[in-house]
Length: 478
Image (cartoon, rainbow, N blue to C red; front, side, top):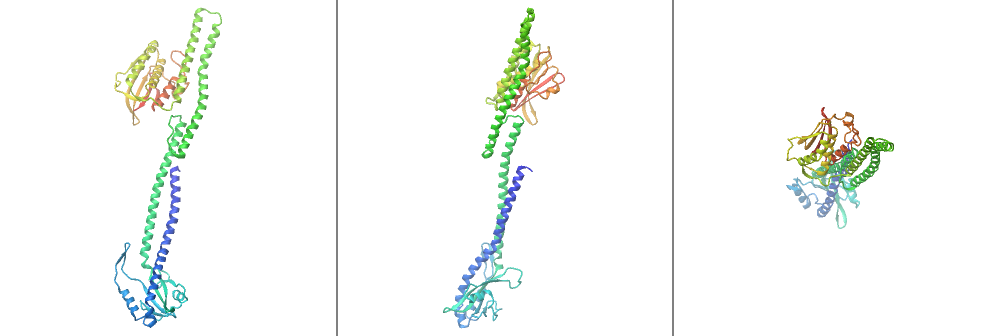
């Protein structure tokens, strides 16, 4: 499972569980909270009505006196009130008055007059001087919202003469409860959705940064030159630590490779110089002495070239980016390199031919000196592997490759081509290839330098057989 999916799944599960418990608690508390608030208001109303009923109950006219008249008039009122968006069209208070024995003397609904309510919780507690209240389901005992009853004592000259009970059906407050629950659930849903979107954004951002580190590590493993990703926070520290570790490991490995490469490259010339030197200590003709002395000079020059190229390759391998890359005219660069190498080509009996179709307006962003070095090495290699009387062709053109525009420089020789086993390792150090004229094998350092230069330009270097020789391609992206 991908890291992003894991993080999203874990975050969604944790958030979902948290939101579930919070919403469940809120929804479960709405109904009791509304009922508690309603009960508090009913207590005030019950005590107010109890004071209004004192005179009529004391005089024995509670059922036909002024209190009964006004209470029944209250029930006949017609209203239409909008309470926070909910329409109220009925008045729902029920008033029941009992005497000091708990017998009903007045009932706004008229159905329980004469009934003994002394055992009802609201009445019996109030008669004891305590707070009396109850909730009853009157029509369907096991179903539906109950009716709340709150009682208040009726006193005349500090003497308890009766109990007034105020009732209110709870189904009248259900719309408010349902609306509140709906709002809480809807808000919870939006909270979950927004949290999910924010979590997804954070996850994508985190995974993006982690993937940058992963791509950086993969590029380092592949030996590519890449800059340390600019990542903030702990991931940035990790990136810098990885870069430092890479530098140290590469430094140790580089020293080992350098010493091994230098030893390998100097072994053959040193052996030839030693052999020639030993022979020069013995009596020989002047011609032989001149020949062996020439061997010493040739091998010394070979060693010097190898050391110079190895040092150049070392410098390029330690370079992470081009600091002097500018837009240059590629056509002029090609002609400058060819003009500088014509004497060497003529000495080898090789002709250099430049394609007439080269666009004079070709230009690319590059380090001019490095590109001259790369192109010089490629053309020198083509001259070295071409037979006497052969031709080296040079061409440059703009071309699109894999959807990316770039400039390609082609150098074609008429040599024997490159062995297929060696071709796959072109650009590596010390890939020895026999030359056609019997001269010592090449060290491969020149083409290794070419590959390093093209990597710094984010381009490519390829070498392939054409059937009549080999073709080298330098590609610079534009």
